Structures are given as C-alpha cells and as structure tokens.
Image (cartoon, each protein chain N blue to C red):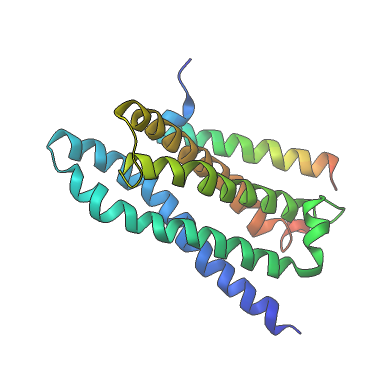
Length: 31
Length: 163
C-alpha cells in the first residue's frame, strides 16, 4: 500500500481524518 | 496582569505563522520545485542559498512559538498537558505542537543537515536522510491540521464546538 504522506493530497486528507478522530475523542471522552 | 498573555499571544501568532508558513512552503513549494530543478540541473541554487535560510527561521520560530504558547497557557500549562476537564481541547493542540517541535529538532534538522551537505554523509546516508526528512515534514503538515483546529477553537470556541 502506498504511503499517503508521499503526496500532498494524501497528507491533507490524513490530517482532516485525524482532526475528526481527535475531535470526536475529545468531545466524547475528555469533556 | 493581562499584558503578558496579550503579548505572549501576539508573539505566539507571529512565530507560529513563520513556522507553519515555512512548513507549508517546504511541502507546497520547495519539494516539488527541487524535483523540477534536479531535472534541469539548477537544484544547487535552492539547496545552497534558499533551504539553509528557510531552515534557520523554521527551527528557531518553532522554539519561539512553543515558548510563547507555554507563556500564554500560564497557570493552565499543567492542566492543558494533562488534558484536564475544560482544557482537553487546547491540551491536544499543545501536545500536537510539542510533537511537531520535537520532530523539527530531532528528525528534520539533523537529516536536512546531511541532505544539504552541512555535515558529512555518504550518498546512501543522504538518500536515507532525505526520505526521513520528507516523511517527518509531511507528518508535521498532517499534524498541523488538527493542531491548528484545536489551537484556534480548543479554548476560545470550545462551547461552540461542544468541547
């Protein structure tokens, strides 16, 4: 499987997905 | 003493824009430009005159951003880093920024020194260093998205975001 960080768009999409995961984690488990 | 946090926030923004601006410059501009420049034999101009200067401001603005951010957190510093109630949002932002700072000094800068010939390295070591530096830079770009989300809204807009 290709590393998503090898492309700019793969990096941006990974960042957006990570943002969503962390947001849900903070909202549901840390507030 | 409202003056210190206000000045710390100003400095945090100034240094943060320089740091993340250069991070985006590397990823959006310099990496593809170097690829094109290598093809026509003009990469030396970038690696000799542009990259060292950009890296100088990049690594030191990272330090200033972190220190100003720590000053801005003030009495909330420990609460943020331990993800205490009400401070978890900004705490995640602070942790992401801290990981990014460590990446700059522990992985990006030492490997870029090899790539740019600032420290001696064999061709094999340079190739490995180039790969590590690129992936770490891309990791920081990826982390910058949630970092800026939580920095921007983790404290000031936490009610609006439900945090």
